[in-house]
Amino acid sequence: MDSKPQGLGAGVKGIGKLCGAPWARRLIWGCRKAFSSNRAEGATYRPENLRPDSVTTLLRLGDRGLYCEVGDFHIDPWQPVERAVITHAHGDHARWGSGTYLCSREGQGVLRTRLGTDASIQSVDWAEPVDINGVRVSLHPAGHILGSAQIRVEHRGEVWVASGDYKTDPDPTCTPFELVRCHTFITESTFGLPIYRWCPEWQVFDDIRAWWTANRHAGRASVLFGYALGKAQRLLAGLAGADIGPIYTHGAVERLNRDYRAAGVRLADTRYASDLPKGYDFSGSMIVAPPSAAGSTWLRRFGNVSTGFASGWMRIRGARRRRALDRGFVLSDHVDWPSLLAAVEGTGAQRVWVTHGTREPLVRWLTERGLEAMALRAQWKGEEDADPVEVAGEEIPA
Ligand SMILES: [Zn+2]
Image (cartoon, rainbow, N blue to C red; front, side, top):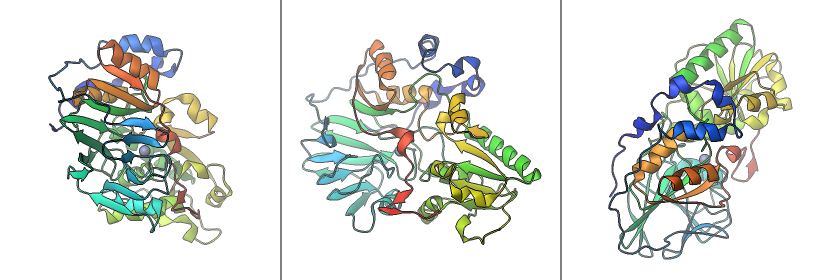
């Protein structure tokens, strides 16, 4: 039933020229108009003959999270459970205290760093089936961060896929998203509004390199904020070979860099900033740090700096102003609106559950196109809460 990615690019044509369009600045109140303008270019749904032997609720939302009653396991539970299947190591999806954890082989290192040495973690290769009380479970790449997985759950011919957080854009730090055919698709909607459309990654890195070069010529250090797990490493992969100046990191970033390098991901050379003596001259260098470091005393050591933040939220001009940043770089580890629609279409699912983000607009859009769509009050938070400065319960030194 699985199939390779097909035609995902079809829904994202013209993103580059749409980025920066004036209408994109209108967020909520302008959304209705943007919706109607997108209908013509959105995905076309062609219901296919994907009928399971019996239609059941194979997964349901319980007090502790997404639960499979037949298999007696949870997916990304927000409270401790006996058996947890984990999509990825971000703090809102991988929480402490469960009896056992199942994750992808690729994601084991970062999950271990997050959960500590005491956690019982079992890992599997991509698409390797595991039988849990008669339910066939397999993990497939989600393209979000290192090791991020979609969980495919199959029982009596019925297939569900819980995608966690995902993106379909290329990212050198993790295995690319794989389209998995299913009857029911459980999706995030972190950036589920038509205003969210990402520019190509190379364009964002061109902007970052130009900003860094200008700062270097002006004798300033460049402080680039990005979530410590995933985004920071994607920034460092994009800056590998830039040859502009030295790159320093915050402790929370450096710790996770080790896991990425151990998994074979090529990152730019970095140095832990706190290793440098007091009074060290950082002018012209790049510093990669988590957003929580903004405004902290830790930043003072770098002297005259220009600050930037790499996030999908930087699509909204007010988000940069509110944080008093000099620059915002629109770079997200989540699907944008066209890619989200293309992914949903590609799964062939007739039923779609929307778990976190801007749920209602997506549910309405899908329902209007004949799908059985529903919003679920899950406690995952997408890009908001993906900043694990705490790793394995201990505070990470800056
Ligand atoms: Zn995440």
